[in-house]
Image (cartoon, rainbow, N blue to C red; front, side, top):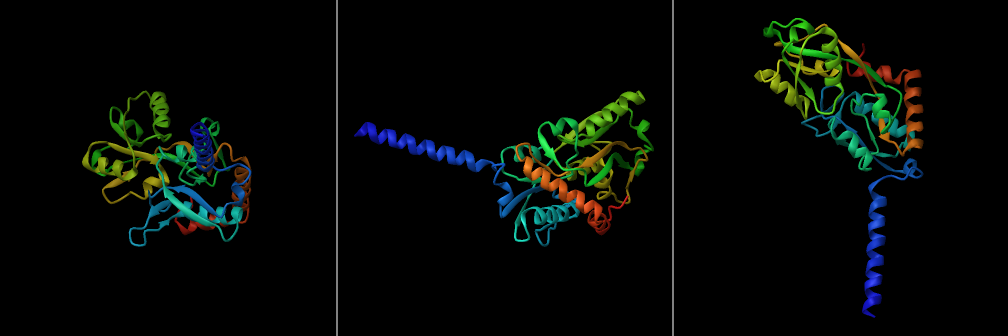
Length: 260
């Protein structure tokens, strides 16, 4: 009898473990039937994804895009839950199934497409450079030997390394986990330049800072999903395509002052 009880306990434990594993991710076959969708967004980028300190709600261009996409893919009654992510956490949270998609200034690259599904681009930007007006730095060449503040796991550093090699200058880099941290490092003099996509930098500009005229590496933002969710990726891509054609994306860009 004791042996039989042990066997039953092991069987129940195995069933519970299997169910837990199943709950960690979304099945490619049933994800389109979800009534609650979790989306990774930024909470520190003015006009793109920002947590409103008064309402405690996320707001910005990417928030609006994600809402429209979810409504059109999952239905008008879908509940969209936003979760703040960084360049370092947004990918892993897709892989574990904790998030269903990311709308978080996620640049599409060939390397990343090997790991994630991306929609077609909904916004295109370029890597730019922000410095103090008092720095005496007027262009990219003026950064020779200087330290650039960049975000962890972003494509910025690689883009600037390639540009520096072509220009024959040397750059140093310091990585940070958030954009406000880079801005604070620039203000305090711990870095000489804050570099990321131009539209992101524009949200941090003030009277003591300026953008340099140089720009690098087009950055195309796409909605990212786990590689296994091919059906979802196809539906999301179709929605982005429709929003481009019917002018909805342009209207949202205009709403948030992102027209280029």
